[in-house]
Structures are given as structure tokens and as C-alpha cells.
Image: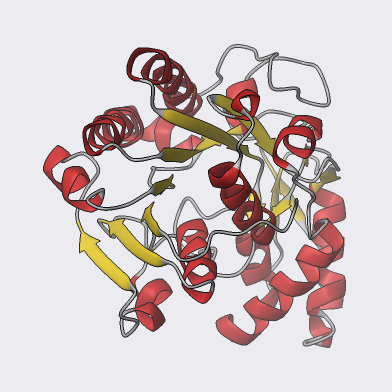
Length: 329
């Protein structure tokens, strides 16, 4: 069941020029699907989708989910929507809550309306582990959440609430995937809001000390992007009514603290550049809105979707380190 894939169907990937979106498109095209990509290139990168442009099964719509007309154009003739378009980052949402809300809430609502009006079979959307907020329990279980700790977390929780209402009111099939710290090829190491792994990799390859927020004991359930590609497809293909109109954790069920993460990256990158082994991390202040520990229970996704992570952290770091070394040097 864990290897069920989408084949010979029509799929829309919103945010398809982004890190996760472009990985989804790559897999879907390789499996013989027709794929539409909707992206406004605010955070997505053209080079992420460049290799798809010559593929007759690929269609690019340069548009914005904040514009209902663009959403309606993008959903035409598609069977499944993989909704990845969002403005990520807790610090970004703290600095500019209005734009985060416009994209993540109003944009999401536009996609729901477009999907409803087009009669799309199912929309699978990127939810977030930030929804667990201040709930202290570990591992995180889907039914128990706390209060959000950032505007970003509020927007992603609102997505779940809207999805629930649309499923009940209009009969649309919706599945939310609460991603836990996804990493891997094409994740952007540049910019103020770069995720922690590519940021650390870039520092190490530049022979600079990575800066850890706090004492390095913050821990996360780091999830390699191939796991995310797998579970998006399983969510599209789930037939059990109990598996639909709900949310799932997408993670590995293992947590790694930042100190361990840096050591793992040093070990992998020093295979390509021995100098990396000599670099030590430095510690900065803790980051506002950060959760101290994050660890997912993946039992629900295993049971109802047949999800089994293909990559645990160790293997994911090996593959990601090699990709970054080849592509950042």
C-alpha cells in the first residue's frame, strides 16, 4: 500500500516552483501524469521548474492564489490538487502578519472555492506542525493541539478549520498534511527566512560557523522531502472514507536536536570537503515563537494511508548533503 502512486491523471500543484512543489512535480511527471503548476514566484524559483518546461505534459500558470481568477484557471480539468502555495516561516509572519494571512488564509479560501466550483475530486493541502502550538505533549497526536504561537501558526490552523467546514458544507474531499520540518534537494539556503538545514549547510560549505538559536537542545522531527512526495500521493488515492476529510502528521517519528543535526551535517559534508569537520557551531539567542521540542506520532498516517517513511533522518541528510555539495559549490 505504501508504494501507491498517481499515474496517468491530471494534477495541479500550487506553489509548484517551490522546494516541495517542484519535488512533487518531478515525481508526478516521471510517473506519466499531466501536471499544472500555479506559482507567482514570490518565493518559488524558476530554476526549480526549468527542466519541466519542455515536457508537453507540464503546464505553467504564472498567477497568484490571492486572485480567484488565477485559481479558477489553474483548476480547469484537474482531478487532484496538491496545494503547497503558502508563505512559510514563523519570523516572516511575525514581521508581516498581513501578507502571511492574505496568502495563507485568503489564498487558501480561493483555492477551496475554485476546487468546489470545478468539481475537483480531492484537494490535499500542506498543513503545518506549528498548529500544535503550546501543547506540551510529545509525541504530537493529531487530535490534541494547543494555542498557536505565531501568526503563521494561526493561518495554518485556519486552513484546517476552513477545510473541515467546506467538506461538511459542500461535500469536497480534503486532506491536510501537517508537515514537520521538511528538508532536501532544492530547499533554498539563501534569504532571511531560509530553513535551518540549508542555512547550516551553506555556512559549513562556506567554512563559516553555523549559528544555532539557543543552546542547541531544541529538537525537531526532520522529514526528508521524499517522504512528503510519497504521502501526498497516498492521500490522493486513499479510498477509506475514514481516511478523508481529516489531517495527518507527515514526519518520521524521530527527533533530532540542533547540536546533533550540525554533527550529522559535518559528518556528511566532510566526505566532500574535509575542512568542514573542523568547524564548530556558535550559539545565538532563542527565536521568538519557536517551539522547544517537536516530535510526531505517525501512527494515523501509517494506519489510514499506508504511509511508511522511505527515508529516516540519517539517510535524508546523506542524500541532501550530496545534493547541496554538487549544487552550491
